[in-house]
Image (cartoon, rainbow, N blue to C red; front, side, top):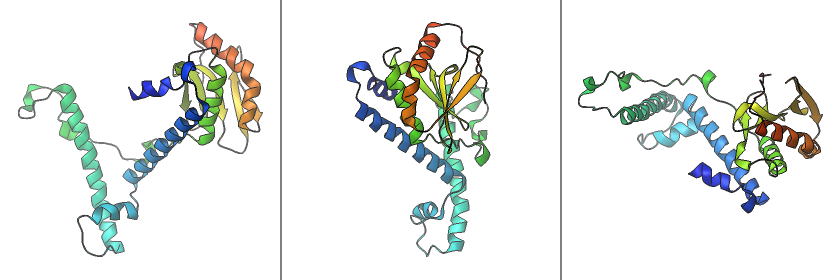
Length: 228
């Protein structure tokens, strides 16, 4: 329901640029907080450890004590997450905990979570990327239903698509370096990148964006999009 209510804010009847900007900021805050939480799960900072250790340890928080509690804290985080996963499994499968032999589902106690930092999602959607998304969304509101316009952020680019499908990509943007680009697929589904100096220059591509969105929305054949 929360996502539906958010989408209603972008309907033509209640379209409000200021409210869109506020929603963009909230999304960025949530994204950043999630990133910080992920970092603490992998490598908890001394201040974060002290926040919890101070509730159970009344001595001085010298370096050796913080180091000790850091290892304890890592184990507690892993146990807590595993327990939440166990609860989800038991709830979904309706497992009778008193008689686990009633199902051949693997023992939930054996479920573990991988806290390897290499597999943690480190993609952070920037303010420029969100602003570009709302610029494009505002330009396309007359040719396609707003909820169908979505984005997909990757480590290499920021893509705007229809219905959440990379195969229905409207455009791609590279905004996280000194040189910025906007990219479109040509008739052979090859990407053509054009440099832009600022987000305002996205407005110059309004016709291309609209034509592309109309084509993808009306045609059942989806373009084969390759990752670059």
